Length: 355
Ligand SMILES: C[S@@+](CC[C@H](N)C(=O)[O-])C[C@H]1O[C@@H](n2cnc3c(N)ncnc32)[C@H](O)[C@@H]1O
Image (cartoon, rainbow, N blue to C red):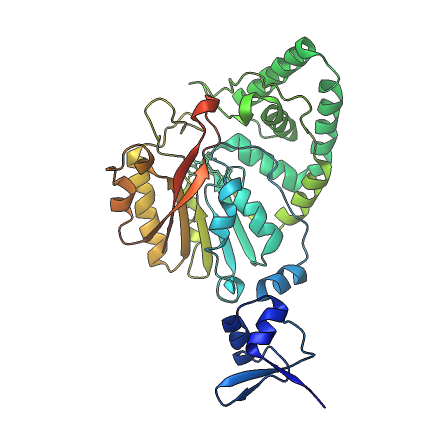
């Protein structure tokens, strides 16, 4: 004879809440569960139903992808918080993912690893970065050969030897940039410089030439072959665009989840780093972005936007609270990663704004 347990007992057995058990019963996801009076009873031998998300992740496999560059403002530590804002059943309602200011793509690679969106769109105004995404998508074999070669030549050198090698590659990269060529060679130099320069910074002078000095990493991984190959496979399904975020507009509709992570509004006059290229992302740019957010909101997209919280410095600064007053604003705690002064790195609030 079949024996039954109560919802409370099932909750204890499966280490979930009683309410969750009731929901699972109501959704008919537990074979043989029955309502008796106003209580659910569950066959004692019933298996704990897989969490829909876990089940989904398993079904879609996939290999975990990691960003291939370290990027200022990279959202590595915030991705869990942002991910919570992606509805569990997202792909039933939304089939497209857009990240119009992708940078190093901390969230993008997580989403690409885990979720089954049918179409992906990424863009960035940094043409050297986008050239690297394209090289991985189109020419990963040649890219890996070049990066392996650089790794083999660079790592055994002493500090002086490494400096000589580094500045040589930096000159070579800048020459290619000046000639406005997009190439696998430029992508290899770009990734090499990112892995070996000071703090993974991307900073250019007025002429647009990369001017970051060498960093002091002992044993940097210049060629993560497995990750590059996995990214190559995953990118085949992704539209990659170089240019202003507004170019994403024709892709975005009411089936699209959009994550936008603009350059920081400086949190103080001296420590702010907002210039990823020769253009600065000032308050007017933030206002232009807010208008774009209004447009894609009107188009029905599900939007999450992150930004630094000016209240970290000045509690009376309501810039974003005013700009996004018709949206939901969450404040989450994070450690600001790139600050040349290590003592100034600390806990601050980041803003997550959503519709
Ligand atoms: C904070 S970073 C994004 C970091 C990213 N979330 C990550 O995980 O690495 C902002 C990015 O916006 C890009 N950007 C700046 N202005 C832009 C514009 N007008 N259109 C598109 N991208 C832009 C920068 O090049 C930079 O890569």
